[in-house]
Amino acid sequence: MNTWWERRLDELEALEGYPVPEADELSEGKLDANENVLLARSLLTALAQRAVEALDPRFYAVEDARALVRDLGRHLGIDAAHIVLGSGGDQLIDLVARTFLEAGATAVTIAPTYSFYRIRCALVGARVIEVPLREDFSLDLEALRRMAHGARVLFLCSPNNPTGNQFPLAEVEQLAREFSGLLVVDEAYVEFAAETALPLLARSANVILLRTFSKAFGLAGMRLGYLLAPPRLSRIFAEKVQYPYPVNAFAVRLARLLLDAYDEVRASIEIVKREREWLRAELRALGVRAFPSQANFVLFEVGDQARAVWRHLAEHGLRVKYVGEVLGYGACLRATVGPRETNRALIARIREVLG
Image 1 (cartoon, helix red, strand yellow):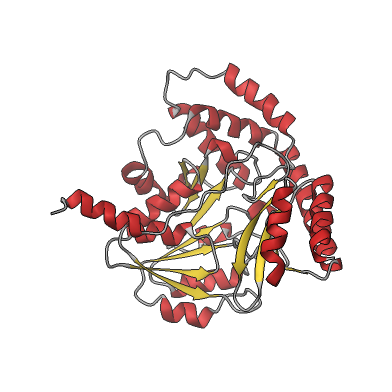
Image 2 (cartoon, helix red, strand yellow):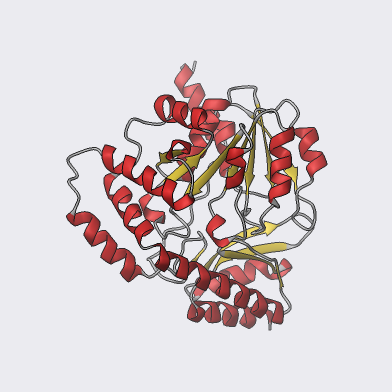
């Protein structure tokens, strides 16, 4: 007879896991994970050197973490009491699921969206309901209201991955007002977008926002994120749920220096936006449907040629994300926005397959 822990391993083995991309050498041709390759590596290297020189790794990052929270409060124009740091946005997603869900509870999200919500909810035994977006990638508010009845948590990625669109603030606020559970809005890509759900913190007691330094700030390898919520929720989350020392001292110091250098971060964001629209226009010129995006990536439909295009790109050092069929559309690929030279190469290689 199997022991309890062997049975648990059997259960875990049957669960969905997160598909980590294949290992690649670092290059600007890596366009499958939405890193911000348009933020100059030279800037990050220079700031990292300063961070290292000021760092004493023998000590926990207690005071530096508090200082980063204060810096973020000034950067966002909110009280620091709203902010809880985390080891990347994914760790905070995991902790939200573990804290507010349990076996038999219900969570709701949209489809398609970031699969990690579904994965972490399933890990605690929660039932996950996925409500499809409309054909134009907008929210089906009526279906969400109906399916979210009695649910504890609603995960909403905005701008959404992989579709790239941002949901109107008025609709997000309507969901917060009508939903009796916690509305978790993942704003990992918000710096590339037109607006933010940040104003809801002052108007809605049941809203949690998730942010990250992995995208616009170029710190994907540092694993640093933060949660924004009403002060009582944030305080309890920090004191009772989050690890005692959740973030590493180097990442915290580097993040503080990046906030001081935000003009350069903002400049890279503007380049991403320009390159994003250039890439969409070039894809459309090939006869490819390229969907509007408020993130640092573009989703595009290739249909029956998707696998051939994906393989051809990989063979030439350009790795994009194979998404597959999306709602009523054919098979799609998702490409991180790169520098113009890389984007030109991407278009040229796609043209070689599509003719």
